[in-house]
Image (cartoon, rainbow, N blue to C red; front, side, top):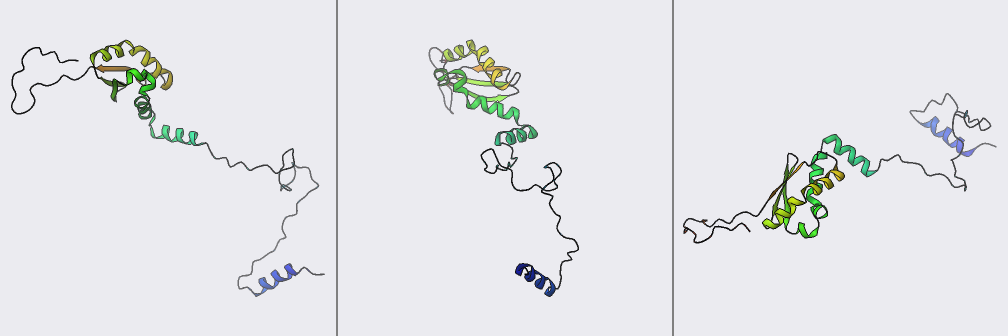
Length: 173
Protein backbone atom coordinates (compact mmCIF):
# COMPACT_ATOMS: atom_id res chain seq x y z
CA UNK A 1 0.00 0.00 0.00
CA UNK A 2 1.35 3.40 -0.94
CA UNK A 3 1.22 6.55 1.09
CA UNK A 4 -1.21 9.05 -0.56
CA UNK A 5 0.51 12.08 1.00
CA UNK A 6 3.92 10.97 -0.28
CA UNK A 7 2.46 10.30 -3.74
CA UNK A 8 0.89 13.78 -3.79
CA UNK A 9 4.16 15.52 -2.90
CA UNK A 10 6.08 13.45 -5.45
CA UNK A 11 3.63 14.56 -8.17
CA UNK A 12 3.88 18.22 -7.08
CA UNK A 13 7.68 18.08 -7.11
CA UNK A 14 7.71 16.45 -10.55
CA UNK A 15 5.40 19.12 -12.02
CA UNK A 16 7.17 22.11 -10.45
CA UNK A 17 9.71 24.20 -12.36
CA UNK A 18 12.19 24.42 -9.47
CA UNK A 19 11.99 21.00 -7.95
CA UNK A 20 14.00 20.71 -4.73
CA UNK A 21 16.84 18.24 -4.78
CA UNK A 22 16.23 15.84 -1.96
CA UNK A 23 19.46 13.86 -2.16
CA UNK A 24 19.60 12.77 1.42
CA UNK A 25 16.92 11.46 3.72
CA UNK A 26 16.07 13.21 6.97
CA UNK A 27 18.40 12.27 9.83
CA UNK A 28 17.17 9.35 11.88
CA UNK A 29 16.73 9.83 15.59
CA UNK A 30 18.38 7.26 17.76
CA UNK A 31 15.73 6.85 20.44
CA UNK A 32 17.48 3.96 22.14
CA UNK A 33 20.70 5.92 22.74
CA UNK A 34 21.24 7.51 26.17
CA UNK A 35 19.93 11.04 26.51
CA UNK A 36 23.42 12.60 26.42
CA UNK A 37 24.31 10.89 23.12
CA UNK A 38 21.09 11.73 21.28
CA UNK A 39 21.48 14.25 18.51
CA UNK A 40 17.87 15.39 18.84
CA UNK A 41 15.71 15.44 21.92
CA UNK A 42 12.78 13.04 21.87
CA UNK A 43 9.54 14.65 23.00
CA UNK A 44 9.27 17.58 25.34
CA UNK A 45 10.75 17.82 28.82
CA UNK A 46 8.19 17.40 31.57
CA UNK A 47 7.99 18.21 35.22
CA UNK A 48 7.41 15.72 38.06
CA UNK A 49 3.65 15.84 37.47
CA UNK A 50 4.00 14.94 33.77
CA UNK A 51 3.07 18.35 32.38
CA UNK A 52 5.47 19.96 29.97
CA UNK A 53 7.88 22.55 31.31
CA UNK A 54 7.45 26.13 30.25
CA UNK A 55 10.08 27.54 27.98
CA UNK A 56 12.09 30.25 29.59
CA UNK A 57 12.17 33.32 27.43
CA UNK A 58 15.37 34.65 29.01
CA UNK A 59 13.91 38.14 28.98
CA UNK A 60 15.68 40.44 31.44
CA UNK A 61 13.53 42.06 34.06
CA UNK A 62 12.40 45.61 33.45
CA UNK A 63 14.41 46.87 36.42
CA UNK A 64 17.60 45.24 35.16
CA UNK A 65 17.11 46.62 31.66
CA UNK A 66 16.39 50.12 32.99
CA UNK A 67 19.36 50.17 35.35
CA UNK A 68 21.64 48.99 32.54
CA UNK A 69 20.39 51.74 30.22
CA UNK A 70 20.60 54.38 32.97
CA UNK A 71 24.21 53.52 33.73
CA UNK A 72 25.05 53.35 30.00
CA UNK A 73 23.73 56.88 29.47
CA UNK A 74 25.22 58.26 32.70
CA UNK A 75 21.92 59.33 34.26
CA UNK A 76 22.62 58.08 37.80
CA UNK A 77 23.27 61.52 39.29
CA UNK A 78 20.27 63.08 37.54
CA UNK A 79 17.98 60.36 38.87
CA UNK A 80 19.44 60.74 42.35
CA UNK A 81 18.73 64.46 42.19
CA UNK A 82 15.19 63.74 41.06
CA UNK A 83 14.73 61.30 43.92
CA UNK A 84 15.72 63.98 46.45
CA UNK A 85 13.30 66.48 44.90
CA UNK A 86 10.46 63.96 44.69
CA UNK A 87 10.89 62.48 48.17
CA UNK A 88 11.50 65.68 50.09
CA UNK A 89 8.46 65.05 52.30
CA UNK A 90 9.78 61.60 53.29
CA UNK A 91 13.22 63.02 54.05
CA UNK A 92 12.22 65.87 56.35
CA UNK A 93 8.68 64.98 57.42
CA UNK A 94 5.34 66.47 56.42
CA UNK A 95 5.38 69.34 58.88
CA UNK A 96 8.75 70.73 57.77
CA UNK A 97 8.11 69.93 54.09
CA UNK A 98 4.98 72.10 54.20
CA UNK A 99 7.18 75.15 54.93
CA UNK A 100 10.33 74.26 52.97
CA UNK A 101 10.99 73.52 49.33
CA UNK A 102 14.08 72.25 47.50
CA UNK A 103 14.54 74.75 44.68
CA UNK A 104 17.37 73.17 42.71
CA UNK A 105 20.35 70.85 42.92
CA UNK A 106 23.65 71.97 41.48
CA UNK A 107 27.13 70.49 41.99
CA UNK A 108 25.98 68.11 44.76
CA UNK A 109 24.38 70.99 46.68
CA UNK A 110 20.64 71.21 47.39
CA UNK A 111 19.31 74.78 47.53
CA UNK A 112 16.31 75.00 49.86
CA UNK A 113 13.97 77.94 50.41
CA UNK A 114 11.86 78.32 53.54
CA UNK A 115 8.64 80.20 54.36
CA UNK A 116 10.04 81.78 57.51
CA UNK A 117 13.37 82.13 59.24
CA UNK A 118 12.13 79.80 62.00
CA UNK A 119 11.82 76.93 59.51
CA UNK A 120 15.23 77.75 58.04
CA UNK A 121 16.75 77.48 61.53
CA UNK A 122 14.92 74.21 62.19
CA UNK A 123 16.22 72.80 58.91
CA UNK A 124 19.77 73.86 59.76
CA UNK A 125 19.50 71.85 62.99
CA UNK A 126 18.35 68.79 61.00
CA UNK A 127 20.86 69.24 58.18
CA UNK A 128 23.24 66.48 59.30
CA UNK A 129 20.41 63.95 59.73
CA UNK A 130 18.94 64.79 56.31
CA UNK A 131 22.31 64.35 54.61
CA UNK A 132 22.73 61.03 56.43
CA UNK A 133 19.34 59.80 55.14
CA UNK A 134 20.25 60.82 51.59
CA UNK A 135 23.62 59.06 51.83
CA UNK A 136 21.97 55.86 53.11
CA UNK A 137 19.48 55.83 50.24
CA UNK A 138 21.59 57.09 47.31
CA UNK A 139 25.15 56.47 48.42
CA UNK A 140 27.89 58.75 49.69
CA UNK A 141 28.92 61.92 47.85
CA UNK A 142 25.69 62.24 45.87
CA UNK A 143 24.52 65.23 47.92
CA UNK A 144 27.20 66.81 50.11
CA UNK A 145 25.61 70.06 51.29
CA UNK A 146 22.28 71.76 51.96
CA UNK A 147 22.14 75.51 51.32
CA UNK A 148 19.21 76.75 53.36
CA UNK A 149 17.78 80.19 52.64
CA UNK A 150 15.17 82.03 54.63
CA UNK A 151 12.35 83.94 52.99
CA UNK A 152 13.19 86.59 50.47
CA UNK A 153 12.98 90.14 51.79
CA UNK A 154 10.10 92.21 50.53
CA UNK A 155 11.12 95.09 48.36
CA UNK A 156 9.45 98.27 49.53
CA UNK A 157 10.68 100.21 46.55
CA UNK A 158 9.13 98.31 43.66
CA UNK A 159 7.65 100.12 40.70
CA UNK A 160 8.52 103.35 38.93
CA UNK A 161 7.46 105.61 41.77
CA UNK A 162 8.12 104.70 45.33
CA UNK A 163 8.20 106.46 48.63
CA UNK A 164 10.94 105.92 51.15
CA UNK A 165 9.48 103.51 53.72
CA UNK A 166 8.76 104.68 57.23
CA UNK A 167 9.71 102.78 60.38
CA UNK A 168 11.49 99.52 60.80
CA UNK A 169 12.99 97.77 57.79
CA UNK A 170 12.77 94.35 59.44
CA UNK A 171 10.66 92.37 56.97
CA UNK A 172 12.67 89.17 57.29
CA UNK A 173 9.90 86.95 58.56
